[in-house]
Each structure stands twice: as structure tokens, then as C-alpha cells.
Image (cartoon, rainbow, N blue to C red; front, side):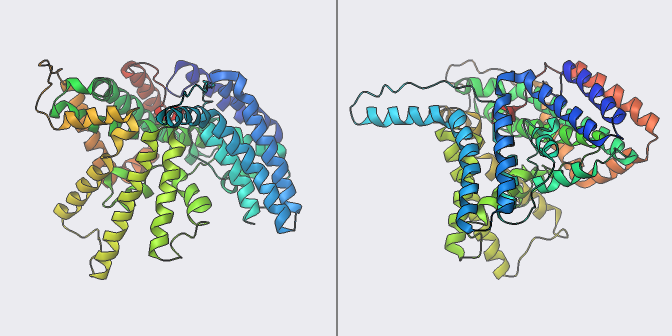
Length: 478
């Protein structure tokens, strides 16, 4: 079940009404939401529900035991149980076939017969997200940032809460569990903010991501050898805005749906393409994943407290981990390394500027601000072909397309004008959001509820007409 589908258009109103009807009976309400969340996930493949149940059960019991354990050895053993189960499940379903294929390649490279059979396992939707969520519970208890919770129902709903279950935001136990304990009801402000976020998210997904993907990105990346420099650049730019609109749109819809149910999820995107440095762009992109890795990987490695050399080492390890988290493939490994190098370079450059007494300021000239934004964006976009393609040969073909004037086949496909105009619109909307986003939201909040409802229904209908098809969100594959 996806947010931009007719099935969800029926499912969510039923859940919304049921959530309000059971508002005064907290446990009944949470049990209803838990069953609805399992039903939501089962629409993908009910067979994989047992993985969610296993992760939930293991971390619930490990968390309780960690809260009672005193000795460091016992605490480490309990934490290892959680990590082995969760990372083991993730590694088995997401990486095992990649490891087998890599082993076959190495065996064949020394002249032997590499015939280890892959298992061809199906990747369960959302496994990278909910395993990180459950691990945050045991990790926070281990680091004594959280006490074990008494309610198994609350914990199960924290893991499976359907708005963020399959593609985030990655919610920490310490953020959502206290809300579940309080049993909050949606306020008027929640309803206003929720409908705004849903409309904004659908606009990013349906109007920007899906059409840019269909018009520019997919045709180019499917046959890059047929394109010259103009088609290559529009395809690469289009994919950047496609993946932003797709993922940021999903996160915003998830946040909006949660607000309508009375719960608040953390912000996941903060207009990253308006960043002025590569350090900044990664603080504004997929915020919940980056903060998760900062708190549970980068800081435990020593963060920036062990000297510059080890700081850069920790940055590279964290970004390599981020690359592998996104997928099992050499392209994701290289993507993570490239991002780590650009972040290290950006950090080194910013340190040098500070030593010379030069720091970025909102009062800088427009030319300087937009030059920095354009440079940052183009450095960031260098690695995106690695993210979109499947092999290094495909990456090389994309690179060749950028440096040739026309297709070597002599029949360069036309680049649709509609797609180019929409790409310009995406840039304009990004700029508008940076400078006037808060004012637009405030204007929406001042509208009468009846007007908001009417606008909401009109736009839902428009998105239904504009939708190319019920296109799955890109991050479902991760």
C-alpha cells in the first residue's frame, strides 16, 4: 500500500475515524492503530510480518533485561544479542546474495570455478528502517539515555506505526514512546499542519518526482548511450529533484498523517538544495538517518574529539556505512566513499576559512550565496549517477554522455519540453520554499477549517488526475 494510491485513500480515513472514536480508551486506540499498521504492511507481503514481530520481541525483552542488568559484561552481552539479531536479519535479506556474488567473483579471479548459488531472497520492504528503530531502543537503554518501558503494546506500536514504517522518518524510541504513553489527541493545529504536510508531500511526489522521472530521468538512465550533453544533464538534474521530491514527499506525507492521528514525527528534510556547503547539505538531507549514524556510530567512534586525522577517519567510516545501508552493491560503496571525501574536503575548507576570519553569513551578497549553493549542489550531484545506476559500466556510459554533443547513433532522442519546464518549476519551488515557506504555511494555518478541507479535497483530486500511475516510492527498495 502506498500513500498515492486509491487503497490508501480508503484506508486512512477509516483509520482516522477509528482513532478518534477510540480516543478515550488509550489501549483500545493503540491496539487499533497497531492492527491497522500490521494490515498496512501486510499489503506488501504478509509473510514478512514475522520479521517485524521478531525484531519487536527481541528488543522488548533485551531492553527490559538491560534495564535490570548492572555488570558491564552482562550489559554488553545483552546489547550484542539485539545487534546480532537485527543486523543479522538485515544482512541476510539485504546483503547475503551480494556477498555470495562477490565471493564467486574473487574465486573466479584466481582461476577457480565460483559456483556458490545465491539464495535470491526478496528484500522485505522497510527492513532498513524498522531495524534501526528497534535498535535505537536497546542502544538508548544501554547508554542509559532511556528507561525500559512497561507497555509492550506501546513498544510494538512504536516499531510498526504505519506512517513511517516502510520509509521513515527513522523515529527514536525516546521521541515516540513518551507520546504513546501520553495518548495525545489531534488538536486543531495538528489537523491544519497535517493536511498542509500531506498536500505538500503529494505535490513533491506526484507533480515533481513522478513526472520528472517519467519524462527525463528514466529515459536517460535507461539508455544513456543514446543521449548527448543536453539530454544527459537534464536527466541527471531531473533524477536529483526526482529522488528529493520522492523521498522528501514521502517523509512529509508520513509526518502529516501522523499529525492527523495526534502524533509528531521528526523532520526529515530541510530544503537541502539551498545549502551553501557540503557539510550543510548532509545536515539537511535524510536528517533522521544522519543523526542516527551520528549518535550511534560517529560519536562512539570518537567523533571530532580525537584530533583531525581521526575525525576524518570517522567521517569516512560513517559515510561508507551510509552507502552500504542504502544497498548491496559496489556502486553504493563508492557512493558512500565519494560523499565522505566531499564532506572531509568541505570541512577542511571551512576550517581554513574560519582561520582566515571568513565565515558564511546571511548578509553575504546574493551572488556569493547563490554561487556557493550552485557549487555545493553540483559537487553533491557528482555522485548521483552511482546512486541511480547498477554497474560501473553504466556509470561510465553516463559520464561519456555528458561530454559528447550528440548521440553516436545519430538519432538523439528529443528531450520533452514538459519535463524541462517542470525541472525549472522544481528549482523555482525550492527557492520559494527557502525564502517564503514559513509564510506560506502560516497563511494556510490562518484559513478557516472549512476552507482548508475544501482546498484539501480539490488538490487530492488534482493529484489523482496528474498522477502518471501509483508509482512506488524510491526508498522502498532500501
